[in-house]
Image (cartoon, rainbow, N blue to C red):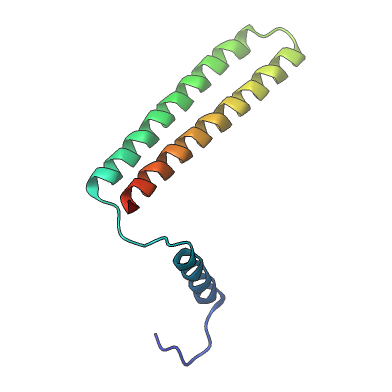
Length: 101
């Protein structure tokens, strides 16, 4: 595409993102097959852990007797899922950083 004509908002945003990556010394080398496999394994592990949490949550809900207990269980599930997602994202970021080392 020619640099002479007007650019779309998408093109401008992509240019800004590329510039930020360049300033942060982030390269855009593709991931190796080993890194892709490691990331897939991490995602699969955390997907299984989340499914396990859901199953345990459903069992606990069936035993709950009060509305407050149900609310507490739902809040615990939300915080556990958030913690797992943060752990997953941190591990994936570690693999991506390892690629650039």
